[in-house]
Length: 92
Image (cartoon, rainbow, N blue to C red; front, side, top):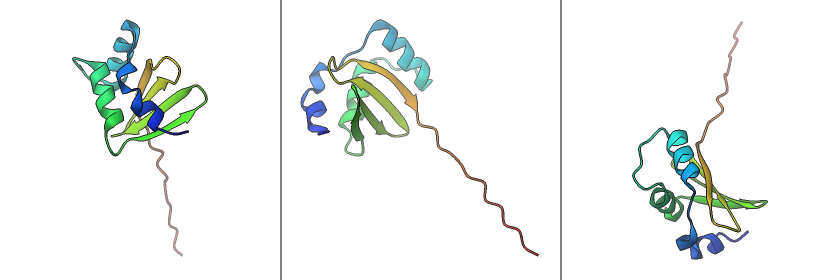
């Protein structure tokens, strides 16, 4: 889906009181304005924006922001977790 749709509606992005608490908790940060914080992340040139089902997903700086594509409500944020692989070399 075209990320320009989300970017052209950036002014509509908002969240709820519960969303503010959830975002701060999930990011382990005390952010004064979570909506502006998330908007700035979405507008970052390195942000990977894609749509899956009814939500937009914005990945940047190890953070994933989930935004409802109809209401433009920030649902949640998560710190991206990376899977690590253990390589074992055996020599004889």
